[in-house]
Image 1 (cartoon, one colour):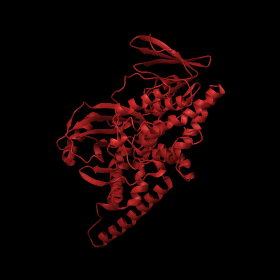
Image 2 (image 1 turned 120 degrees about the vertical axis):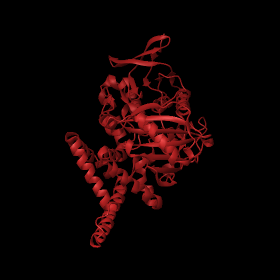
Image 3 (image 1 turned 45 degrees about the vertical axis):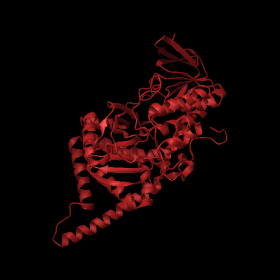
Image 4 (image 1 turned 60 degrees about the vertical axis):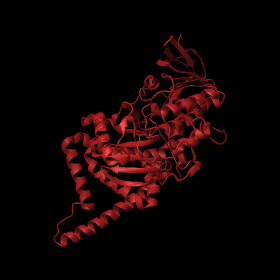
Length: 498
């Protein structure tokens, strides 16, 4: 017979967000079950990089020793390629230990990370059903029924609450009518493990090429001459422009061997695997009568980097408070779970809506040359301007995103670029050398070219994109109204210890 039983809460999915939710509930004395279709350890398409804020949560959950974090190399440097050009090679300036987080990240393969986190939830008191597939979800008389199947047969788990932490193809989200399919907010990726890599083990590598715009590639050292290499793109882009992510990934890996000296002799030790993520900008509603959605099922993924391990765990720590309150009250209607919406938006909107705005702007592939040029100049400035790197660099994966400070730096740079470029252009023009093709004039030409090509290719799509920019900009109030990014202090409540 398959998995059966009665519980206070059922978590569908045993990845980092599901394990964090189960741990947070079990620590409160709540009888919680986790349903995970895989048998851990298992493969998971991911860059394997856990940022400092994620390490802070792992430490708080008591998993650092199980993961051997003291023996793992600290990642605190990055190398950024634009084509064959190294635009940045330096430390990660915004890894400064703010908010009690470590000043580094770690490469933790998902078969290690997910196993340790789920074992930790089980040790806290959660009942874990591995190798168990959720086949359906129903609600009768205020009780959620989760139909399961294992190799031994079918079963049913019941509880007043169900939490969907079951990824992009979430069965719980499908039951609630909340599964996301908007390709504007779906990232797709390819990942492979390499061997024969000779790179500094404390330095991550990212690369940008015009053929996989909007998106980026990465090589993260895993020790012992191994590395995690991957590439992510926007699903909408690959479909609209008939791009094969698999082919683009293979071509970029071949080019990387010539660009990064440490990858010259690298070979694939595994087959490429593909995956997808739902990003924060596509969130509509994450609660329903009988439960909530967390992690990737709820769209808790960075819109710029597509990083979701930390955000997924944060969403679960926050959501556990709503679940506990509903259980204490004994009421499980949609309104009882609405506080989760308020809580997670208070935590994430400050930074995520700002990042979603920029992600929306760079979504138009026709403007690839322009935005690649502008961001390359940003990385080059960050190489020698440490304050710029510390503040504006957070848009590429930092915790303490400060929208007002970033905007001030960017606009100051833009006006300076215009002033410098305009002055140089006038001097060249008066000297009879004609207008230059680089600098400000070159960037302006790239913008005009992108605009013309976008309008010519698909006027209706172009207008839709402009409307999306306006819509994203209209949501920026929380990003500029607050004085402090709530994520800096983390998702835990000091008064409860959770």
